[in-house]
Image (tube, helix red, strand yellow):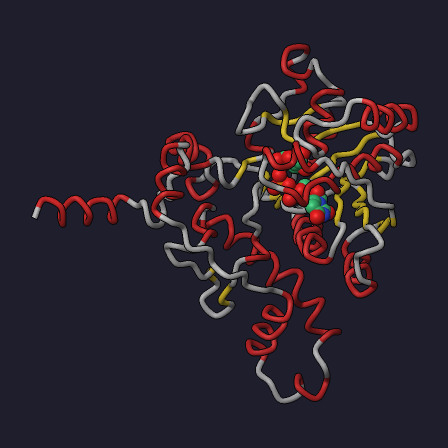
Length: 335
Ligand code: UDP
Ligand code: GLC
Ligand code: MN
């Protein structure tokens, strides 16, 4: 199976961390395929070395940026122009078939059966199910397709400013042509979509014994931006924290893989000897984790913004808008 590979991308060290966790999760679930990570020059040498321990190939690519701020504003992700860099994955012609996975995905079981699918297979996007989500897709490397995609990107651009808009226009018959190219949603389970159809989430959530296969931390809440307590093995949250938009169970799974499979690689090498010699194992782990993570300030959501989110169906069911809090409000009002 040396001519088939899982491929991901990191244009900076933060997404590099995501790639390390994704790569470890694929290894832990015993994939028989190769693992490739595309990195851009901005990724540090240290991160490339760590990636080299998990991935079979670390390939340097130049950044492709749509610079399409107008369309990117529509998805409120000005930084995603660089996702055009993903297009380089079609140039990996040493492989006959590949599965691209975003660096913010996590594999929960072996998914090698996806290699039986054809280009372009992908799961529906939770926001617009007639589009596919480009966080997980099956494709065939080809210089011809690669060149066509590059040409398409300069001539037609992307309706969302990122790779997803571009690839959906390029593979425009995905929604209607061939149902075998529709991957089940459990191969790209969006961690923010779960609250929009809670009964289905309960039905397919792994903790209920069901078979979710890949979790995708889609959106601007990424696991590496949350703080984690290695002693309790839980992500630290408060009800106003933006991490409350993501199911805590998924965040804990990501961090669990990080602490058990990734941070041991760092603790061996990266903690200076003089401090590590007299520390307990657990303290070393906390230190490694805190060196690798940063906590962004939790944005305070105004009641106006909260109402807007509520009206858009994005209530924070686990936090400020939890049933308990609503009941408290009602009780106070009635009293
Ligand atoms: N990516 C990257 N650097 C960036 C932004 C994105 O390397 O600055 C890569 C990374 O593989 C990431 C993918 O492009 O997973 C898509 O971006 P993201 O996952 O943030 O988009 P979302 O799934 O949240 O829409
Ligand atoms: C999506 C996808 C992501 C893609 C981005 C920009 O939400 O999850 O993979 O890079 O849109 O197009
Ligand atoms: Mn993603």
